[in-house]
Length: 411
Image (cartoon, rainbow, N blue to C red; front, top):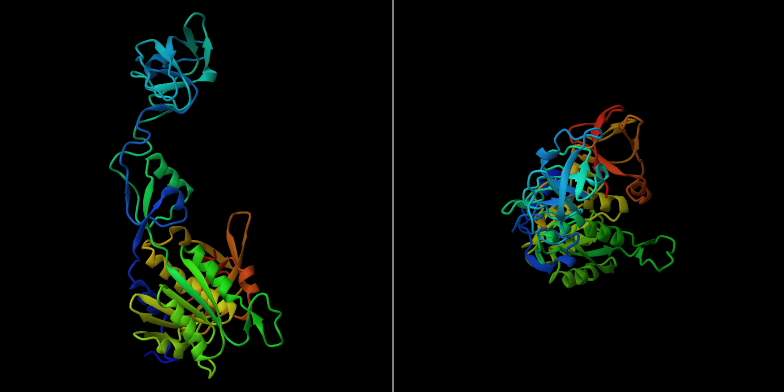
């Protein structure tokens, strides 16, 4: 068992997080898949759009027939028909010929470009003057230009946004295999914590963490269930944990994770049959009293009761765990490489990793400036003001004003 004050490193905790396998999969109708995570690579079953189509209203032509066309010297072509929407043209385009076509219409055989309608004028009879040239494939989408049959279009682990759902719909996918949502039980603890509807008495606080942690879980792709508030007794906390164990993949307990005589989380975790305490204390600020335990493929976490500490630990440890369980093994590229210039120095203590809350401002040249949001870990307003975290590594005593720092955006 890990003993408190035998502090584990942040990297060691993240190694244990990375050791968890991804969860199972389920098949859902396409319309139920927004925000879900694709469980298997998606390979195009056919070409998209599957035919050569126009992107403009205009005239389908052979590009070589309108080479050099201009206002003063238009190309004169014979209009031999119209390309009906949603149908295969019944004719082909030969030398000196054209056909009226609409946006999305299928190009007739022989045509390889479209001249926009505004560059065409009636020359009498069935003849049309075209006053602009068109290069081959201009104003045209090829049969496999959007997607070619057999190409991998979406990797496993991709979050399905509106555009991914549109692609799947375009290729006729009605049901999608997605990762199961991690199920997360959230428990607040402490005699001083009261429900939102209560009017706190002196010495009491409303339950913040059930709501902030549930929102973090949902934003990261998990399913959150708040089980309520456990008073300061091992039995009360143990009862809620026992309720969660049959179904939860992750159990989050906020409060009661430090080393005081009223801190029951570690004792409640030790009472869970088959659970192993991996860490009780981490070299991180805020969040030093964090507890991590494992029971088979389930994880149990004791998070600090202070609102800012609990949320920072959620960002640093719980969000990566949820991504791992969802099979999202690739890093969020957009969250890497974002940088800002620190506008004032920040002190730190060697031997711990400090996660510092910052607000951001953009200069006229686009350069971001990071301003530390100072405040104690019990203040939720410091995170409301903050837009990102920056890190002071374990081997440094602080960060200097003017230093370029990497940003970890708060979603």
